[in-house]
Length: 103
Length: 457
Image 1 (cartoon, each protein chain N blue to C red):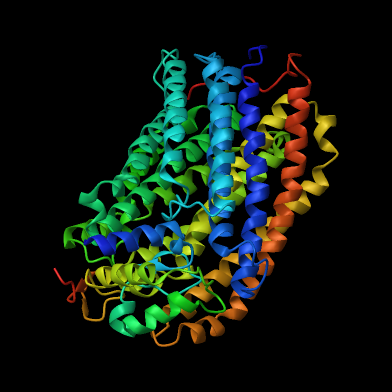
Image 2 (tube, chains in turn blue, yellow):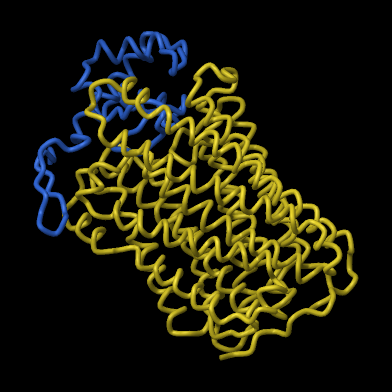
């Protein structure tokens, strides 16, 4: 994890984003899961939400550098896997073989 | 029974726990309304109300379970506490740390970790007080020279594993874990799941203690079935968390092992309580009618949660239920339906043992109202969460707002049933808090004659 992503991670914790958002299904349900938000929506979309907020999400008044750090962190998380899995096999045991594991 | 007042520390833990639950329920209801109406109490952001709710209700579980241990050992098991001073220090550290955590939440000073949203520095006093508790418990329990009944093992195991799992939940402070997202998420889920297992050890141990005491027969705490439950619980504590991690791209063997670990622990626990219920004489049920009632409610919720837990443990179904309100239904159904009912049974068992009947008989009809209001509300609450979870499970990932609009009716029912559940629990807590206070106010006067200590099987 690079320095900017680590800064973003610290901000994510500092503003308690986990109260409303999830990574890999872990976190609160007020907002969407953010594991693959960069792949699915793009950086500009994420940046706009973080900067302006929404009815449900407060505007935390972050500066440009902080917004960039958060977007970089979301990009880092995005590279670690796909959630929920898109390509998988269901085995006869009921187990699931996940084919889109990046590792 | 001893006549000194060392057991009063246990009662103070219980009363503090009841306050925590009462306040925690209020923040849960506020959070529910914020979910529906984001402008509701905007000064108190959801990022504050959620951790307030979670921390307070988790504190309730620990405080009342710990209070029971501090009460039962010296008062009913003829095992004087190794150190009353340590127990009192434990209480005050818990209280001061709790106030500091609340202050951090309200001022927006977060550590930002799921379930532990306070700054990590506040984990230090938590480790200190748990050390005091561990030393006091083992030094006290070792005075018992015969083979331990299962609840002593469960309490001791819960204490030891809390240390391990709580330490594990702080591994993210080390870059090796923090810098690898998959590793980090896996360790988080593992530690939280196992932490739940550690408090289940404390709570299920309390349930088996109550079963033995109410029946006057130790066989429920010394049978093969009871020890089977203990070892299965230990196994689940170490591995049962994994049904939360199927969708994290972890190694296959971890997912397969997780699937293999079923919810048999709940089944055996449910069976023990069910068999115990059938064996009780009417006078035993009547004497401890409130504690009995709460234990039976816990047993029914065991089977409801068992059904849900088995479903979400199948990886294929888990694909749709993970990260949805069904997971919340599983968590809330367990913590309210099972843990809270057992802990309320513990409180009202103590009240029945320590106060003359006239002191508590007057509130029996109000308690009945509180009991039924709570359980009926919980049934509606649980169902609404499952239905909201199905709605979210069907979400195709396109419009989050549209999905939230679709499940809004279920969230409305969930919030309203949360309000009625809070009222029901407040009624119960009010009487429990008041009556425990009467026990303390009676000072050192000896307790009325109680049921004889259980006979070994």
